[in-house]
Image (cartoon, rainbow, N blue to C red; front, side, top):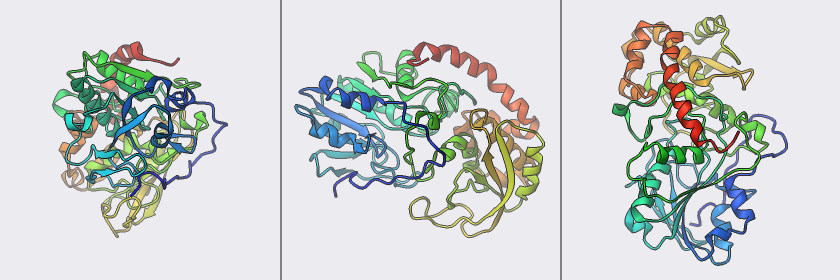
Length: 409
């Protein structure tokens, strides 16, 4: 099977302005890949590595004096269609003849054998700006592998969909390190992947990168105030359950519901934009939350029934059960605060549940996602406002450090 010939595109869920931002891949392609002349390259990519309507693999393959030596795919695979947590197998790209190695299967880090014969490793994947979205973990492990192999690592930069101005959530504590939390950064870190790569190396957030020759091909036309719709670029589903920007915007907060017995909206066409529990009436939660006047959002009671969706989730939580849940409508995306809203929703459901232990069925996963084991105790003992206030000093210190790696104003 030839990889990446048929790509799935999803509606953006919002009107986009005229395209104003050129990605690092756009900039590199416009230079006719001159800096890769004579090199055999490895590409860490998925279906989002597009230049216009053409995939980066095809363009590099067509470039004179450049050879694609290996291709590496992250979670969800090269096509972005594998389900959450589903292992992905290796393969072969029939266009280039290059091996395709899965970094979400038998290994999550390129091996020396996989990198043999490569002159450079290139990363080009669209991220969503949340620490627990695993593409940035794949990037860091690939950086580490490149350093060990003594080859340069190039990041082709792409926008942070949440903007470069929104920083929020607990900074990861060292005992919560995992593939969904590789670095001591907040849940919403406010960095592009290129800036994050520079910070990972510069701040020693991952060992063994001191000698890495790291290069970032910067974007043109992006600034820190821009959320995705401001870029004018069409949204490409970054994974099966992030089909539109709307889903990506709420994801850093409602993803907490993965640690509960409640549904996070998987098994519907609006994952993360609605949540719900069998035991709790979502309309009551909506009324309570609307009374708090949280910025940029309105809540309402909704009814939904999770069901298998072949393109998204074939075994959703609470499959076939009708849920009186909570719907989230973002009314002002620039003032909306996804992590803070997620804490308010989680706290409300926790206290409305007849049995909080039965609601929080995966406390260890909540600690992994939030980055701290303290959140569980906080939910039972303090207000959501106090939980949010508890991380503000840490995020302020993080921002002071991360500003040194900003590539954009």
